[in-house]
Length: 128
Image (cartoon, rainbow, N blue to C red; front, side, top):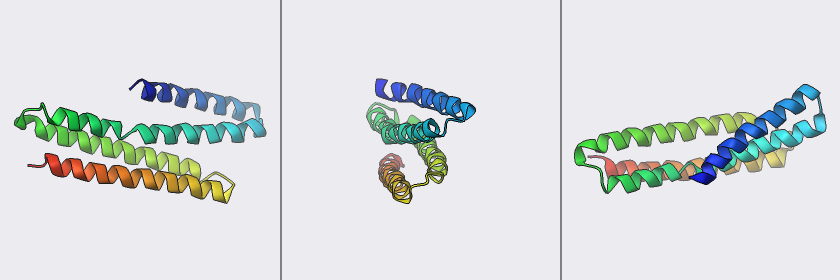
């Protein structure tokens, strides 16, 4: 979990750097800093499924009456993953290089597809 905390801190810092470049109107740094924002956001998205692993572990020790709460947690996790995907896609749209943009979109699509599969398997396992 330390890795995710570090990524969240990096997310804040990369935005600060981007904001500084924008205010200074440094176009060279601005593009580089913008790309860093996307990279960090993707790394956070890549780590997001660890929450599903926590749910799997909790399932083994959770009383049956509490399983609906794990289902709610699954829904919230998937909603967060989808929300992050929307924000990352919105940022990717602004990348000028078409190949780089397409590669980023594919990466997000692949991640979300995998997470959706994990989500469905877990919900199926938890469902009464």
